[in-house]
Length: 77
Image (cartoon, rainbow, N blue to C red; front, side, top):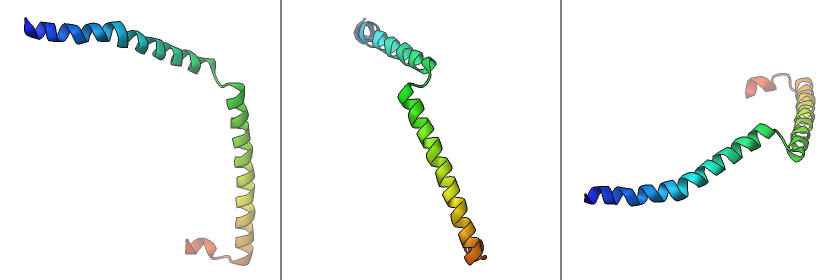
């Protein structure tokens, strides 16, 4: 009888407080994911893509300079 009373209290607390909050947060996050990117996130993604392309061009230029000035630089790495 004592063990059942020890289990009922925390179980009621979980079912009345924790479970509803958990369900609300779960479905709220599911809805946000299904809505896709916000305008700000899309802008940031485009900006990162442009920066990536710029960095790729810079790396290719630097490698071309190194190839011209020191053809064996790749073997040293």
